[in-house]
Image: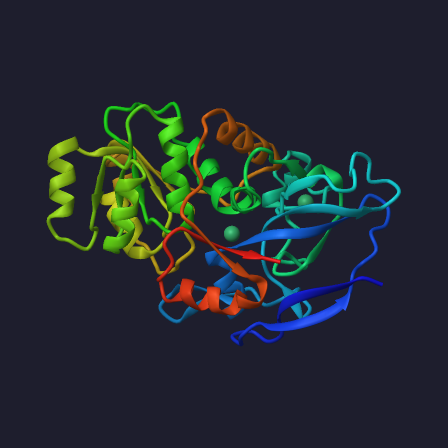
Length: 351
Ligand SMILES: [Zn+2]
Ligand SMILES: [Zn+2]
C-alpha cells in the first residue's frame, strides 16, 4: 500500500503536524492525484484558527463539520496517479490543476453551475482533505483541468487566488472606464488581480496597500499608480485626479479597506469585495441612493470561470506573480510568514 504524507491540522490554533496514512483507493468516478504543488492561501490561516473575525469580539466559527486530523490546502496541481472504474478521461500520468470548490451536485446552486456557492459543499482543503499532502482524492475527473504550458505552481494558484480575482474583476468588466479601476490590497489575490486586470481593462489599474514593499512590487508589475491608504493625503489626491472612481476591488475585506474603497467612489461607482480579513463596516444607508453605489461580494469562482481563466492566462500570456517554493514539511513556517504579513506574492509547497 502506498503511503501518503500530510501536514495535518491536529488541533485548532496549533501548529500543523506531519501524519502518514495509507493512500486512499479511488472508487467509481474518483481520481487520486499525486500532488506536485499546493499554494498557501490566506484563508488557510482562518481555517487553522477555526474562526473568522467578524469585528469586535464577534467570531464566525468555522471549526464544525471537519474531522481532525485534517489537511488544508486548495491551490493544487499534480499528476493523475490512479482512477476508479467510472472516472472517464482520467488518463494516468495526465498533469492537472484541481478545481477545489466542489459542491454536492444536487442543490440549486450546484444545478445552476455555482458549486462554489453550494449549500452542502465538499470544498477541498476546507471541508474535505486538501493539498498540504503528497496525494489528494478528487470525486470526479471533471474537476481536473489541463494547464499546459503553465507551471504547476501557477496552475494551482489560479484555482483560488487567481479564480477569486478573476471572478471579482469580471463583475467590473463592461462598466464605463472613465477612470482607472482601483485594487485595494496586494497580497496573493491582489497581485493576481493586478495581472488579470491588465488583460481585462484598457487602462492600467491604480493600487493601494499599506506595505511599501507590496506597492513597489505592484508598480513593477504594471500598476499605473500605487498609494498608501493610511496616508491622509491619498484620498484627496485620487479624488482630484479622477473625480471619483467607478470600479474598485477590495481584496482585503476589512472595515478600513472597505471604508477606503467606498470613500473614493464617484456617482454610479461599484466595489466588489472578496477579502475576508474581518471587521465591521458601516455606512449611511442613504449613500447607496445618493451615490448610486453598489457593493457586491464574491466567493472564489465557478468551474466554468476556472476554465475561462486558464484560457485567458494562456491567450493573454499573463505572467505568474512572484512565487517562492518551499518543501511540504515547511507548511507551518510558510503559514507563520503569511500571518506576519511578510510574504510578497505567493508561497507554494512542493510535495
Ligand atoms: Zn484560497
Ligand atoms: Zn450543492
